Image (tube, rainbow, N blue to C red; front, side, top):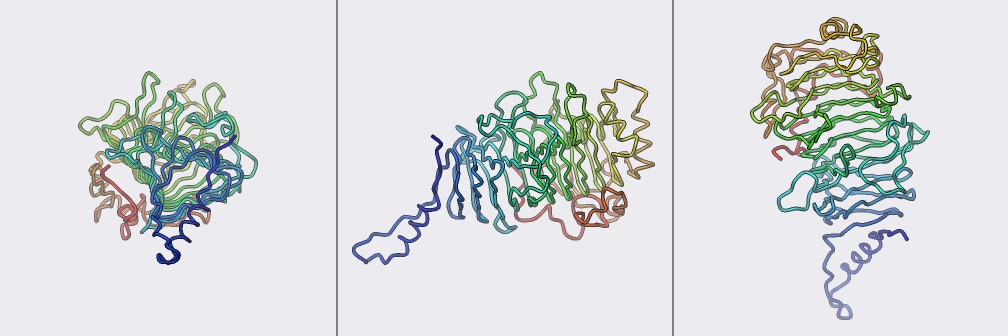
Length: 455
């Protein structure tokens, strides 16, 4: 028998009781509920309120077309003994609309919090994917493993002004829960102003789907910050990725590496060609790699790793400090998309500690070289590379405890002008900025009160 959660009625009764006069018929004051443990399945519309801390114990599934509403300022926690994972399963919704002044926070309940204390937030929709992953990662139960559908305009709810701290749950090598995982989520879903910090695996991983997002910040996560695959075809504007040089997850013997961006279509065994093809359209990002800082992990890779048959647009962005490379193109199909102009790193600024350009894992070595990629990026796509990170002119991007990615007055970063002329960027979703990078020099959202650094 499924376990179900019935918080709303009990909290309502407590509220009524607390409004009674204390001297009526000898009633005693009712102590308000401030901590609630959450287990099992949520199968009816449920409301979580600020002032109550909700502790997620193990895997909690919102199912049966239920809606979970979470008020601004609400805190959801987990202890390391259970690494709670909240899963909004397809057909159900999460309405979590925090505010800048009152963000919704998912975090550790431990006195000394560590990555992995909170498992993560997973949203599963009914949009299309390409079937690259057969089931949801991270050890979910058999009743909730499948994902994908046919409705690309599907609505899984609202995620706004949310901070996810100390997430990640490694079940097996390559089988993990991320900070925010979105599986085939449709374009009817609202996603903006999300920070994922100090997670044990990826910050954001999107498996298929068509939803769009703005103002996403990944800070000090162990694996990839923006991991897009399984046919994800959404648009994202205003993104920040900042890496802790000493912090990566345990790669074991997998040969995996940690990147700011890692974008795939399908695996080697499936020939990279499953449809729909992963083809994100991204603009106004600032991505900061480890830049060979003292103590840098050997598991760091590239600023950008586009591979396994993915298409992409990344425009009007600033990318710094990749360890092994800045822009890496893997596999023939991915290279062919770039040569054809189907993909592009457009109107952006790049400086990597490793090589700025890398082409890898080609079966036809004559298809594209690093020099050939450089020529396409810097001529056709109008991006620029620099000899040093200082030449781009961000204020203090490699100060990991208190990063400052605001362009300095008179710098290359502040004099560069954004362009939205490419066909992929003319959509009304995109705010047509004049500046490149994630932050407006006149209004730096990366310093907003809902954002936390130093963890």
